[in-house]
Each structure stands twice: as C-alpha cells, then as structure tokens.
Image (cartoon, rainbow, N blue to C red; front, side, top):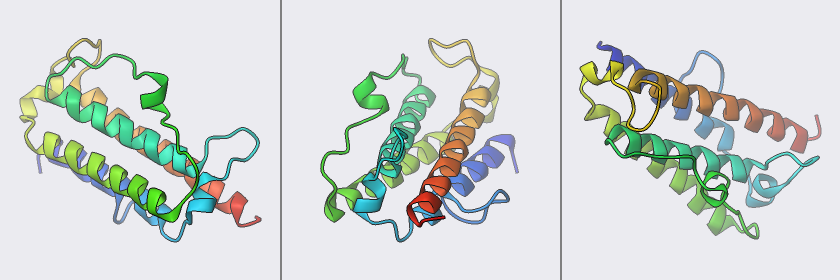
Length: 155
C-alpha cells in the first residue's frame, strides 16, 4: 500500500467504518435527530454546525488537491448557518458531508504519490501535511460530536 493509499484509508476510517480510536463520524451521526443535531449547549457549536464545518474543510481540501489556491474560508463558509431544525434539512446536511467526503476521496485517488512532498498552492505546508491535517480535523470534531451526544442524552 502506498503512502497516499494509507492516508486515503485513514480519511475513510475517520468518516465511516472501523477506526482504532472509536466511532467514525457516520457512526456518531446515526440516530441523531434534527432537534438534537441543532441543540446548542453553553455556547458550543452544535452537532449540525460541526457537520457543515467538516464538510466545508473537506471540500476546501479537495480544491487544494486540485491545485486551487484556497485562502481562509469566510465565516459563512467555515461555519455555515443551520437554520431551523427540520429532519429533511438535517438529512441534507449529512448528505453534504458524505458528498464532500466523496469529493475529497476522489481528489486523493487522482493525486500522484510524489505530490505528497509538494507545497499546497498558496500555503507554507505540503500536501502530506494537508491530508493528515484533514484526517486530524475530522477526528477532533468527531470527539466533540461524541461529547455533545452524551450531553444531550443526559450523561
């Protein structure tokens, strides 16, 4: 397995499937209702906000892998508004997360392994650092989602 394939595998595991650390994002989102996903506690981001934020950065990562210069995301891109909770809109948010993940996974599949050491366009870091960072970002926010689920369940 090449290094790029190993990174792709780690990204997939952060999103779905068996991961060493615990439940993946999709496992954590199973059974979460729109009301629970939208619930804000003590000024923390909601599960819904975290889902849209993760999707935004996976899309940004895909764009960077395709060679686009991506600056800082505007606030409305980085933390999109969730609006009023409704099951259909929550389902669409999860679909957006899945689509962003699929787009990033496709960009990784088309990334030549020798590009891992190249600098990302407009950044001071490499493609290798970017991809590991996205996996770490997913897992960081997965941990937050796990805690928010427990808080909502009354633990």
